[in-house]
Amino acid sequence: MSEPRVPEVPAGHEDPTRPTPERQGRIVVVTYNPIAAAIVAIAEQVGRPTTVLDHRDAEAPGPKVGTGTDAATDPATWLAQNPLDADDALVFCDHDTPQTLELLRSALDGDAGYIAMMGSRRRAETVFAALQGENLPDHTLRRLHVPAGLNIGGKAPGEIALSVVAEIVATSYGRPAGPLRDGLD
Image (tube, rainbow, N blue to C red):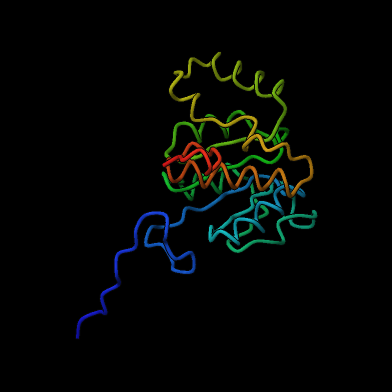
């Protein structure tokens, strides 16, 4: 018996309740804090599995939320054992996480489709200068989103998280993340 045929739907009229056939990439968050908690909550709503990595011990407040795996472990160890691919995103929610530069360098050497770090523009300049000092090519450095997220003016943890997840989704679909009224395809 054959599967019932699903009619083709014109672009822009897709049924949002129908699951997409593509694999939804993981969002791996390094360091648990209010922004990380909000990223996990929003990612759940858009169907992205999450993993929260926290270098602090298991008794520390943190990775107690998520739709995926939560691990109170050394992020470098977890990332070495669970390589990210082009569908996956890696977000550093604290630029002071131990080994941040080493983890960023390793991620940039890998296949993750989105690599980002929270931080001010000043912190971004410092990070880029340090990575440029290691002779990373410009095309590699362009993969790093610092500061993370779209410029929506958000200040609260949930607003910042929304901007980050929106940038992840836009990046995963190869979209420029502009207003729909501008007719972006």
